Length: 288
Image (cartoon, rainbow, N blue to C red; front, top):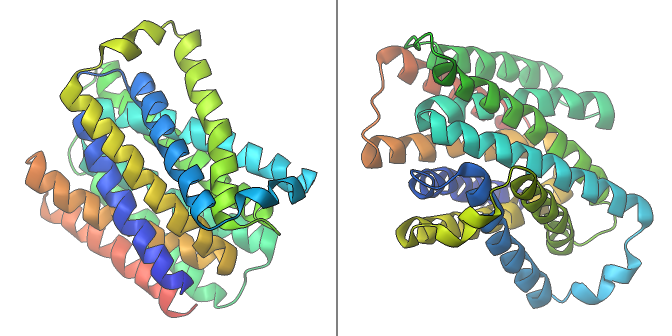
């Protein structure tokens, strides 16, 4: 069951990137992140209410709450970096780097949680994902201007914080129903997102978002909420080092839509890189 949940997470995450890209063509990425977090928060608490886990919030241990909070802050940092990267760079460049969080997450899961089953397959898979990513992002040289290169740094930051998110959440989920845990951690994401907007003097921009882009931002929030509910159920019930690679197959969905919607093109080198990422991910999941 948790494998199916991980697959569902991948599908929704792939759609999220496309919807978000449509919503930040003219809207500031920090503002868009803060607005969509409101949608995700509402979605998460509704689901926690549906499954009846809200009354158990008083039973959440302080240690679990701490790690859920840290996971939420890491998520907020990852989102800020990710959507800034999407606003500057192409989806087919940003997403592969962001998915490199798989490699770091798997290595951390091995080191911290002792997930050493089928270690050889996991390490080979990590190497394949990393090689495939390098093939994809280096296929087309960027210009020498600072803005032309900045998307890469934001994408790397997104990957690092995303890896920390998964590891911290695994600890925080101990003894906490996954829907409730998701709702709790999003509260911290929301606070962080709006604090960043306020500190950068962008609060006024939240009232002037184009209606069409606002719809896409909200839809991306719904897709994110659905992805997270599937994802955190999966990492609670399954192995982090298996769930994360499956979730990162969302790259296939994102890149298929980026080609169809944004007319982004791919070279043989980039397609070979994508194939390497998918094959390496399947290798890691086949030996779970």
